[in-house]
Length: 321
View 1: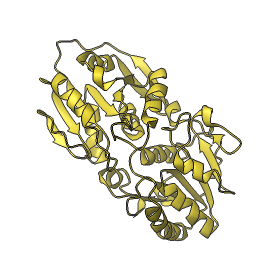
View 2 (view 1 turned 180 degrees about the vertical axis):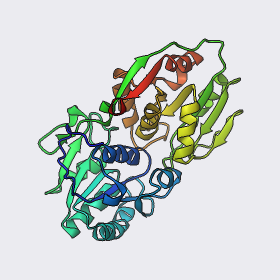
View 3 (view 1 turned 30 degrees about the vertical axis):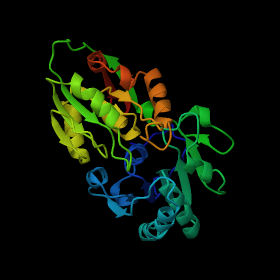
View 4 (view 1 turned 45 degrees about the vertical axis):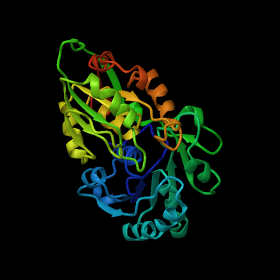
């Protein structure tokens, strides 16, 4: 579904190589591609192989590269050659990336093949650019966009936001006596854990039916069904079935939740506790809370009332209305 309001100006004849890390970066780029009307016969993806990408990109042409960790220069360089090959094989006129470090690989590959490169900064970056964006702002002859108006500058234009697709409606809140079906997902980014959130949720969800996706975390919940990770199809089914979704402030998890009509209860990872590379998730919570798209929670103050509050709202995709 192409979006006439996007300033990116892609043509119906364009062929794409689409490059993104898994998680929120891939979820965003997939939604952007859907906005632009990109079909499998016109696109070749480059990403990492995990449950999310294998299920989300089934039926598409995909090159899977080795995982590139944040600030992993050797991994960034290693990813260049397979992206160059993908560009040549796809006869691509456009290379687009939403990050993270693999976007630098894509920029180098685009330069080598003389392809047009577009970088879209993650929705996760509200008032400060990512390391990847700060690197790419120095590179000439590429198009750079942000999804936060606060980050617009002479080097970054405004692309609109994936959040523009969603609206929120108020519904009847569940009773305090109700047993809930709860999905907890804390992301799968390596090597970061989010045991604090799991520990806080464990006692207040006793008596509920809980499905946990714990990623790299090591805390073992005392009840419910625990998965290290789920493929996207399984995750979507759990989102549809859940009364309540609890998530870290990861863009991929939040977008998936909103896409299934769920307003998630969201807690931000903290760099002080070694849970992420920086504190950008706190910016995400503030932005999405102000837009009414999440219910925010401080882990130390988390109560059952926070869970019930999320049941009073539902999200709708405007583009599918």
